[in-house]
Length: 399
Figure (cartoon, rainbow, N blue to C red):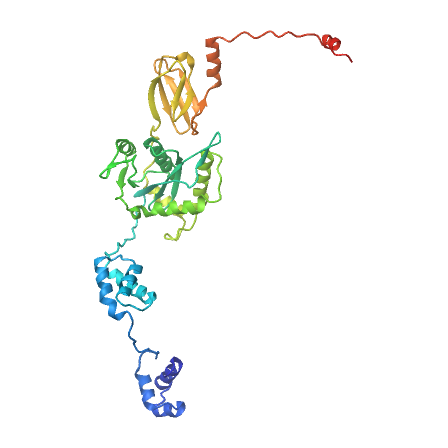
């Protein structure tokens, strides 16, 4: 059999240099019929092994019948069935055959269309839970959640840490992310998060009110369809592999500060594989299409209560002290992500202002409230302690 190099040399001599078949015969010593076949062949010669019968041939119909009935039948079970029928071959040729045959019986796989987004069109959101709990002080840690967002056109991202999946916390995190991005897109894309999705693709009242206040549209992805918000899913995967490993946090504020710095110095300035440029380089064009930011919406929790005889307010398992002089009067309480405050409804007096504590089962007492409470109850008179001259001790203890 001719080698590829000999075949190529024969064709070069004949078609390029014009050597005749008889001349090739004299030069190479090959038979003229071999030379003619080489010149007529348009493909390089290759060794083709004559087909040999396979031990699997007589069982192919049975394998096809099994896959018609159950397309996902494991290969180990197929092997057991055909061995009971007399199959003596190995598992490798069976598994190779199943790998080729099984797609013919499975449902057609889903295909995806690469989507191009216009500037300012959408921002995708997702909720990511860090693998480790976040320190919150007093020797405690707490489960945290990060609301992650990604602009469709520029792929610029942002994130905000919260400690619950309740609507006020999620809406505050959405608002913080939008303010970090620097403008309002046309549509917010979310999966069916319980605090935001009321069922059937409809928003909850609080989420609809939030979007209406900011003049935003919303879109809820179909169930079990993470590909619909693949941009933020990939950014979330980047968070898990690039931001979280090897970091430690003092508290929630430190976590948020490191997260913001990671977005500014790492995520938004890397060369994006799909875009082939940095997301930050596209942000200027996207911000031209984003609507300007209005006044931030009021997203604080609000409640009206009465100051009890024990002047403390309980929120999120923590007790915050109130001005004891306002006992029995109604107060308006505001709870933000940073502080807890209250004012008296009838006079507008300040009832309390505390930094919000995310630890559990703590009692936070303001110093002025403790002093006022002592004054109202009257302080006990100081005890008089006899003080003797040191000379008395010299007498009792000889030198």
